[in-house]
Amino acid sequence: LQETPAQTRHRLLSEAGYWIERLAKAGKAEALFIKGRWYLLGPQAEDCVLKGYEKVQEAKAFKCFLRASKGGWTEAHYELAHLWKKRGNFAKAIQCYEKGAKEQHTLSIYVSFCYHW
Picture (cartoon, rainbow, N blue to C red):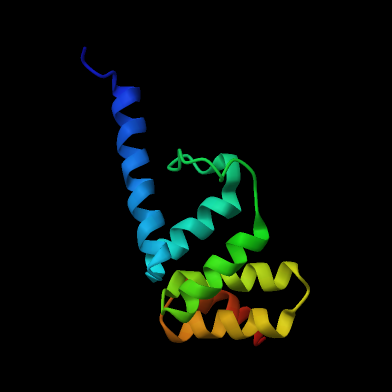
């Protein structure tokens, strides 16, 4: 029997998820960032078919973004800043935006610029 396009997509996303999980366990920043997005988006994460990401889990997303940020993944600084802001820690949020801005992350530059006016 030949796979339907939906079955092929699911199989490939499952395999990609397996590798992202392995790379994240190894501490790879990009994989940690992707896992963080999956946790943050929950059921809206269309590119994740793995179990464990069916609901939004901000605390787990925060941990992933924190590790990805420390690993040098620029986009993680921006996501981490949003979560710091949501937690009411504006000083940490600004630090993260500024860190992203120094690494030329466009949205971080914009937000960082707005905070300085």
